[in-house]
Image (cartoon, rainbow, N blue to C red; front, top):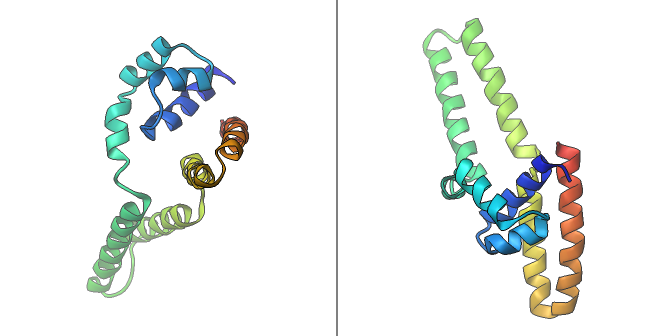
Length: 145
């Protein structure tokens, strides 16, 4: 993995708040000191707290903006000027992207849920799945980068 891929992967692990920095460093293949530096330099604690603003919350806000823009056009006689048309087009595309694209973070969440479920049934199988998920996430980060 490149340093950027390692950092991205470390962030994915950190944001879950489950692993220690030492465990993250081991998984990523770097030092705990490097994880601490990335955490401080990129304000990972603040970013992790901001993740509570979910994709659904963002979509609700975007739909409200979209509706307000449409209402403004109606108030102007129902004809959109180029600025309004551009805003509607961009909002439509952003909404579509949020509704249809799967981020690396979402993939990670699903994998995490699967691991937690399997742990309740068969701890050895869960450990095996963790290795596969680890490999899969590294591959996803390479494709994304």
